[in-house]
Image (cartoon, rainbow, N blue to C red; front, side, top):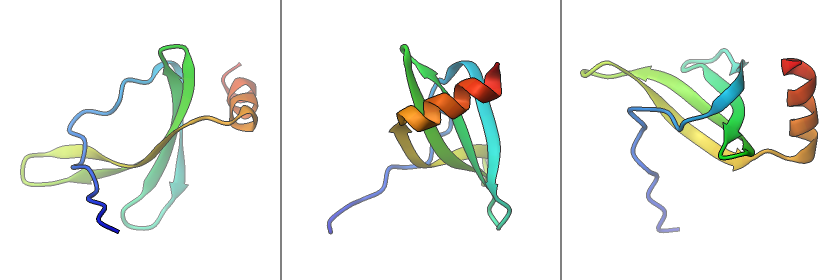
Length: 79
């Protein structure tokens, strides 16, 4: 496929205003979903909290523009 995944983030993407965060799975490592606004667009991301020799960091699994259904659920939760 020729795809090389990006390196893990040392700093998460900036999700602004009313970020909703929830555990996705409890396996090792745990995965989390965060939903929040980036430049007036609602995005969702799944990430893992990891630690290496330097310290803790967030490893991005996937990041996408939230669907209308996800936006509706987000609005119900953060109200």
